[in-house]
Image 1: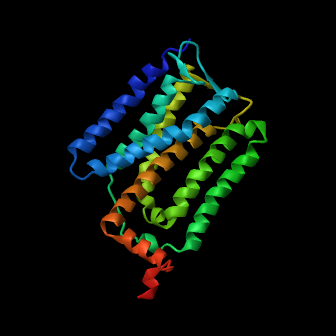
Image 2: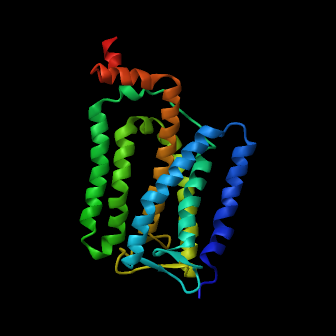
Image 3: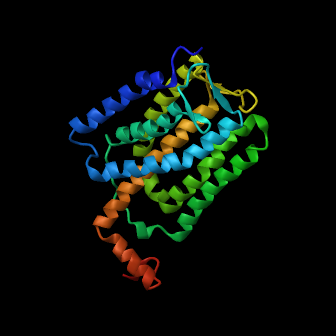
Length: 263
């Protein structure tokens, strides 16, 4: 029997960090706070639940992982309640950490050429294609599922504004790295305690400091989703405030995709 339940795991390893980060946002002056970033977080939570729940339940049904005896208090569909809470807590942790480093670069939405946007979409599609091909190899199934699932989100993000994200790459790296490292650490603890068990048949068997690379890839990708979503949401709100989207609508109506070139 696992020494902790999934809910106890959250109480010990997840909620304390969440509360510390929330307090830091509240107490520090130089942070993102107020309705705008919080509305971005709320949208992200809805998207995360809608997009992740079917994928997660499918992998559980396929036997990619399962849970230790006595580790779960109850399930909805295939996944335990603690799993759904993780889908909520992780984006909150990542975003509260990112709130500590507010930055919006003055880059115009309408100055990103269509070819650049196409390259971003294609790059995300390539990630999905690699994942799809990996699904045909049993030992690569979990890693392939992560990449196949990640590609559409990356296509949207990168197609919308990868040049902007590249400008903010240092902020992105800071926003992604520490939450990913912490989540990987506590995930390794949970695996060692037997809270959840990964299938040997559906994983590569490759580990980094004892953590299966598939778990590291999952936490990296989900943290990346959260950081990119919030950065671009705040950027979009900034462009709305500057009136740029009105200019963009006018350009589209007049069939001019890049109005700055006409000046």
